[in-house]
Length: 111
Image: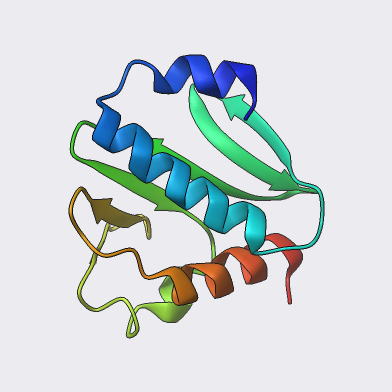
């Protein structure tokens, strides 16, 4: 994990950090390409060229910013999607791993 992101995540409760790590692993496994992992405007971000996925931690959930989320809104009907199109995963909620892999792959690679 990028050292800046690691330091940034130390500010959050362990449960949020654990959720972040699970989501991060799904991002990294969603594409065979090497991603640029960086802290952009204090937000952990994963880039492939100009495409990106961002994980925005809060005290009780993580917002996921990825352009393909809206495409999968029916599959994510049990989850909150913000007016800006971000998916919210709350502590204790099941992680929709299969759908997220597709979202991340399509967002980052355009496929």
